[in-house]
Amino acid sequence: MAVTNKTIVPQAWHGLCILLIIVPILVNAAVKSCACKYCGDVTYCHQMGHNIVPIGLPARNVKRLHLYGNNIKALYGGDFRDMTRLEMLVLNNNSIRSVDVDAFTGLSKLQSLHLEYNEIEFLAESTLRHLTSIKNLFLDHNRLSTFPGDISYLDRLEKLTLDGNNIKSIFWPSFIQLDQIKSLTLWENPLKCDCNTQELARWFATTSSGRAITSTSSTRVCTSKNNCTSPKIVSVEHVRNDDTLTENVYIVNERAVLHCNVTGSPPPLVVWQTKTAGFVYPYKDGRIAAFPNGTLVVSKLAKTDTGTYVCHAQRTASSDSDMMKTILFVTDGVKPQAIPKRSKVETNVGGKIKLSCDVTGLPKPATLWQFVDGEKSFTAKNVTDERMSIQEDPSTLIITKVSEDDSGEWRCVAWNSQGSAFGSIEVKINVSGLNDVTVIIIGACAGMILLVVVAVVAAIAFTMRKRQRRHRNEAKKNGTMKSTHENHAAVVEWTRENDEKRETNREKKEKGEQLTIKKPKRDTRTKNEQDRTERFELPQPYEHQPDVKGFRL
Image 1 (cartoon, helix red, strand yellow):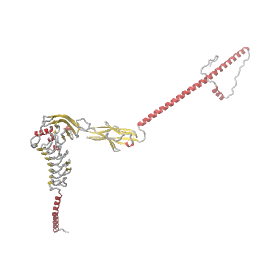
Image 2 (image 1 turned 120 degrees about the vertical axis):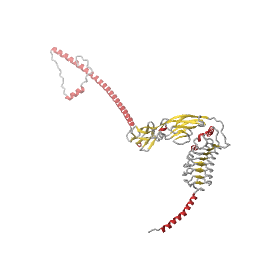
Image 3 (image 1 turned 90 degrees about the horizontal axis):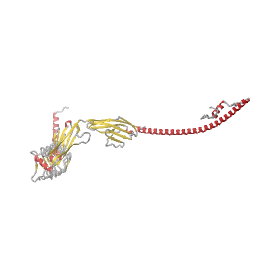
Image 4 (image 1 turned 90 degrees about the vertical axis):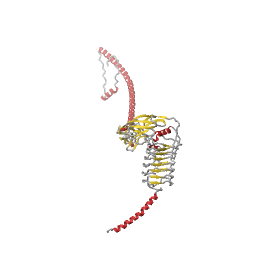
């Protein structure tokens, strides 16, 4: 189907008519949604009875925001979020008592801040530090009791009003970095007339032209004499959190903190002279930063930072000063190493294990013991198991009364600013059997018992044998004596008979008579009976040869 121009033209006119109707409606709705009298680059929300900073402000476009004359009691973090183009913020004549530390975060282009005629009692540190472009700061007629320390860092500040507060003292070097300051009002503050206030007035009087303290004819002049003393440096210290290195040796990329202890009334201004940044005054942020209490912080140390650092303590008069030097040395670090003394430890249930690990590194590494299988970690400060104890140099883990659950991989973990490392030790706990100590004890006890038994048996055997020998000797002695007497008598009788027969035969021979010889009787016993008789009935041999006349045995 062909489309002609006659059909297109009426449709275009209809669309244009709809836009002409809708656009005014949208614009009117947008205007009505603004919570202020007027919303735009310059937004007016003054004297509208707001209790808080209105929600829905044109954050990205507003350059000037007027909120004076309302009933705002507090400023919260995020009240001015995304107002990156804001140059002027007017909050005077409200009832503001508290200001959140993040209330002005992101307002890097803000040049004028009006907080006068409120009820502010205190501004926390870093509340104003974000205002890097601020030129005009109005804090007069509040209830401030202390000088806001962040003001000293606002190096673009040209006008500052602090009159009508309750400030009693202002550290005299507080304005040392405010090179652009042209007007400062301090009247109607109960400033003490002391050495510090006198030095503050002296400093303003001796600074370059263009700076002045705005005053009225009714301003009280501090002229009383005080016991002011000259500045003196007591010591320069390296502030360290550990003792891993010597006092003045640092590792690359670490942070060095030096502190200059000074005395004097009023407290002197402390300026550090460094190798890489020259003279460093307080109230200046950066990699090398000095603080009014005499502390110098050098972050992200490099080898080029090695050198002599001089602490200068001075007052307004350059001749009234003191100085002291210290040396800072920066070196490369060494990654840690953790080397176990034994790669495997084995014992039995109920025994004791000792795991040791040699740890090296610069700076000195911190250590912990980790049970990989049990997903547990232990340090010397957080050991909760009564069976465990951790020692240092070398790192040693001692576990008593071990159980089967202690079996697995144990790690000695070491770390420092250069990295981390670990060493593994395999622990094996035998469920059955006895440990080495128990085996030794049982073996020793068994050996002692065996020795006692052998000694007792030997003593009994010796006693019995001795007793048997004594009884045998007594029996033998009695039997032998009896046999000897009987045999001796028989021999004597037999000898006498033979002598008589021999004498008879001799007499008969002389007379010619026939000799009578008595034949022995025939033994009718068997051979066995004869042997048995000889074995059992024959008299015992003589123990001693008898003295018998006429015979030789």
